[in-house]
Image 1 (cartoon, rainbow, N blue to C red):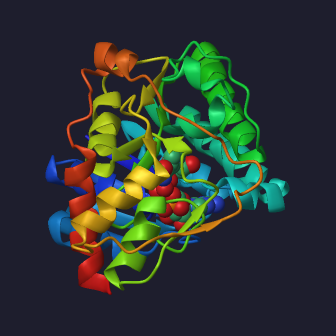
Image 2: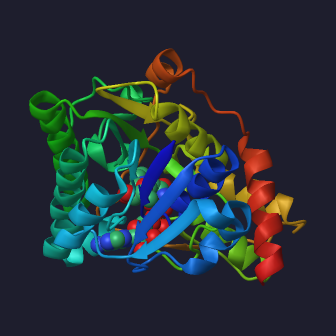
Length: 317
Ligand SMILES: NC(=O)c1ccc[n+]([C@@H]2O[C@H](COP(=O)([O-])OP(=O)(O)OC[C@H]3O[C@@H](n4cnc5c(N)ncnc54)[C@H](O)[C@@H]3O)[C@@H](O)[C@H]2O)c1
C-alpha cells in the first residue's frame, strides 16, 4: 500500500509515518516544515530506507495536486494544517489558506489521482464548541458549532470531504481528535500542556496553570491516535469519529500526576495565572462510535503515557 502523509513531519504525522513504514507501507511525506521538523522523521529514515520519500512543499500550492497525481497513493492521510486556536485568531486568513484552500488542493489531487480514501485530522476540541459539562462526554451527534477560525476551517475541511465523497466517490474518514499528547509534541507551542509541563518539570522549574486549574480535558496518547488513523485507512467510511477517552482530567490533577511521575515529592507547587480568554472550560469525547466502526479504543492509561513523555523529555533537557 502507498500513502501520502501531509503534515508527516509534525508531531502526530511523524508518529503515523513510523507506524506505516513498520507495517510495510510506502510513504510520501508532504510537509513545508513550518511547524514540523526533519528531526521528527529521524526514526522513519532508519525504518523506511527506500520506502520513505520527503517532499518539502506547501500544500496550498498547485504543485501539491500535481505531486499527488504523480504518486497515485492508495490513501492520503491529511494532517498538514495550521494546527492551533490562538494563531487562527491572530491570523484567520492564513489559517483559512492552509486549512481550507490547502485541504481543497489535497482533495483535488485525490480526485485527479483517483485516490480511494482520505483520512482527515479533524479537531474534537474545537469542532463542537462550548457545551454544558453535564452533556459530556460529547458524541458525534453534538451540534457542530466552532468558536474559533481554526474550528471553522477544520469544519469546512470536513464539509469538502463530504462533498467530494458525494460527487466524486472519494471515501473519507474524519477523526475528531481530543487532546493528543506524547513524545515529539512541541513544548513551545500554545497547546500541548503535557509537553509544556514535562519540559518544565524535568528542569525542576515551576509550571504555570491558567485559571483555577479545575478546567478539564480529554488526553489521548499518540500511539492510540496513530492506531486510529491506521484503522481509518480501511474502515469508518463516510464518518466523523471521536478519538478520545471519554475521561475528563483537570489540569490540577494532570499536574499532580506528572510531578509525581517526575519524582518531585514533595510536589513543586504550580503558579496560577488568570484564565486565558476564550478557552473551553471542559471537554471530553465519547469514543463509542470509533469502537463500533474502527474497533478502536484507548489502550494507554494517562499514567503510562505521561511516563513515556517524561522519559523522552529527560533525554532532551
Ligand atoms: N495535537 C492535537 O492535540 C490535535 C488535536 C486535534 C486535531 N489535531 C490536528 O492533527 C493534525 C496534526 O497536528 P499536530 O499536533 O501533529 O501538529 P503539528 O503542527 O506538529 O503538525 C502539522 C504539520 O503540518 C505542516 N504544515 C503546516 N502548514 C503546512 C503547509 N501549508 N503545507 C505543508 N505542510 C504544512 C507542519 O510543518 C507540521 O509538520 C493537524 O491537522 C491538527 O489540526 C491535532
